[in-house]
Amino acid sequence: MLKFISLLGTNAYLPCNYYVRGREDLKVENCRYVQKAILDILKRENIVPDKIVIFTTEEAYKNNWIGNEEKPGLREELEKFEKEIKEIKGMNAGESIVESVSIPNGTKEEDLWDIFRIILDQIEENDEIIFDITHSFRYLPMLVFIVINYARVVKNAN
Picture 1 (cartoon, rainbow, N blue to C red):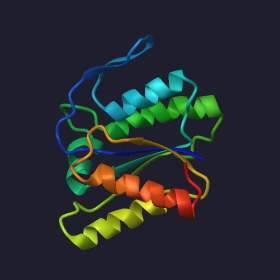
Picture 2: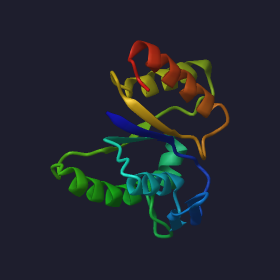
Picture 3: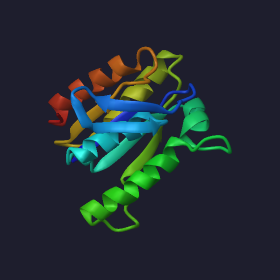
């Protein structure tokens, strides 16, 4: 299974233009969330994840996963994307490919082990992982890299 994994940040995501250097056809304009932009670019290249997992702390969930009057949350943006993907893949309306998974803030050692376990639990045997670290907090990208490397050995993930 091809999985897209990302860590949602707590800061305000502002609309930006994203592109792949040298590829004018791979440009996403006025997109608030980099995760959505990356997924749009991948889709144009016919790379469509089977599952999208966004890890959120409580603060990231409140600030950026759920929307408010001023801006849509990433959940809303990915729900639109999910509808497009389901049509492409011929999936049932009830099947969800987008999931928000809660992780602790990581202020204590126990939190780090919990984060390790939570992320590892999202990786299944033979999964292929696309990992976005764009707005990841301090140590989290390195921790996820460790989890993915561990999953390569124990779950044959790529």
